Length: 379
Image (cartoon, rainbow, N blue to C red; front, side, top):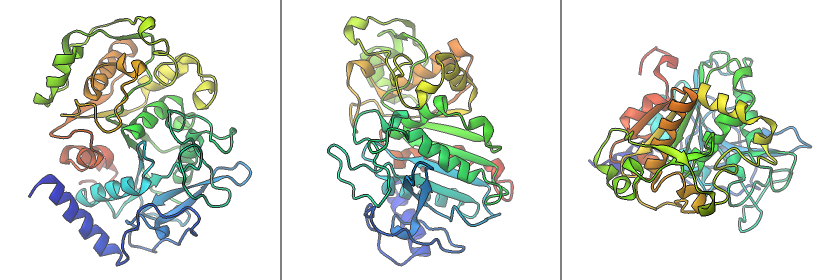
């Protein structure tokens, strides 16, 4: 059976076991948020699996999909997986992906799965929002980099994630929670890369937080150097990288010619000009410290070497390397060498730019569902 066929069978079994209602893509924001089932996990992207997160700013709120209630005490929950969607803001799709992974990991019994929805009614985005629901930025880098909301400049997209983490860390609700994993793919991976660096709640929660950055098109580089177009960063070598499941390390770094991309080191591609948003509240040294010290796993698709799936081909992104895989490998090597960071990097076999392939691969399941937090101590 192929990987795609197995995934579809697994997802179907999970859905059938929990509910008989049909799946509806992206429920309209104006619909009332329903109650959660008392015991069975809520695994479908429908209104009854949605809950509100109060952002504490004049009644402002945003939705998440959640497999269990975020309000009722639940001593069963030992892990939480927060899965951030990509540039299409398709939280329903990523909720399904995360639940399929939980099914394969046999993790639903003690894991709370959450998919935040960065809904937007600004610009070209036409989401129907409920009263007081925040409208985040429609396109560009703002929502994925801690920028202000389109409807409320006093709120940032990182405030939304902060509020989710604080809700989970409430011991009155989840007294046995042992770990929170914040994961994202593509634009969601960009969000997690910047959030890891810029959030100020990591050390305050009383619950360990881990970060999983999968296949982003760009990273927030800690300094003004970039990989030179030689070795594994050469265009030809980068295209042929798919033939190996081992991370490449033949990267050399040096000053970048700003004439080729004047904005190459501006936030969110680098640390300069953090004029507003969450990252502006920290110094560059604080961002570097967080990047080096917080536990992070970088997931790179073995065959994510083509300019597909919303690939960022801007000069600022191309300064980081010719492919997503090369950009990730180079970034990891650079922070290891310059910041003494100790991240984990995994090349996910046979996967391209596909979140379902990445997160349902056997080797990745223990990363997003840490086995030491399991009820029985094993998975």
